Length: 338
Image (tube, rainbow, N blue to C red; front, side, top):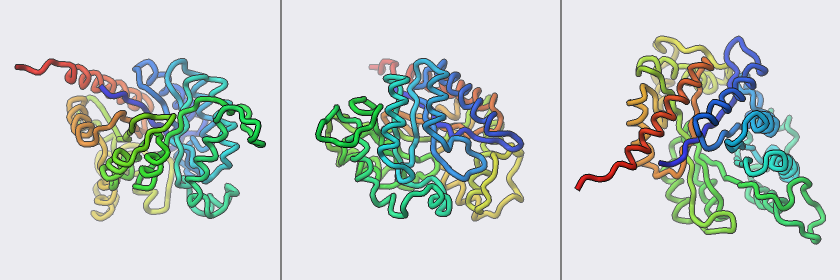
């Protein structure tokens, strides 16, 4: 069975604090490690009242320091916000502290609005130089070269896997050209999923980093004991996207019994569209949904995001999803009847 991993935005729920959100993140990562998830990624977002993982490298260090075996990384670092040298030094430091456990996923979007992007002190053409910045970042991890005047220390000579993240064909083409693993953000931007995977796989050029294409696909998974309870838990992320679309981002809201009267039909259709790569329900329902999703995408790995208001319900969802993973693995191992 393909590996399952976890993507976490350290959600700040209504009435709570970033302190508690980050403590929940570590607790969830420890829980994921016990359940044999493959990696635990944090995402960079800025000026978002419901997300505590803005200083992503710092949170990665916190999580890696509180776990033992699970890989920890970024899903991702929004490279246009940063100097490639600074990121090389940060991740060189993380790899030096937690050798063999750090991933560096890179995104092209700023992860913020334009005013916040300017406040980050980066130039407006950052996304346009993304390919050059990725190559520059790669160079900082090369073995010590006396001809390279500027070096990342720590960083030089370290084997830190670099991933390209994307939600369009651009990232797929870049990952293929550079021979890097690719992660697609279908949990909120599914429109180009299948086309992007096709482009990545057909255009992939083997490199010293990767000999064959490797695609990880993101999916929302809200698992509960019953379909009804899972659907109720799912209303928190539906509300979250609704408020973002209205330009009124806020802390994660508690689930509600019904969304009727909270939005217009066209808004509901829009949210359903962006969240259509979701498996929501009992373990049996989630198993059917993920089996279909894996068959459709031929993913090499799934990265699960479980945006749930209640922390214990979120941990329970990861536990149920691990059971689904194991059930799918057992099903895959069953001999075919003659």
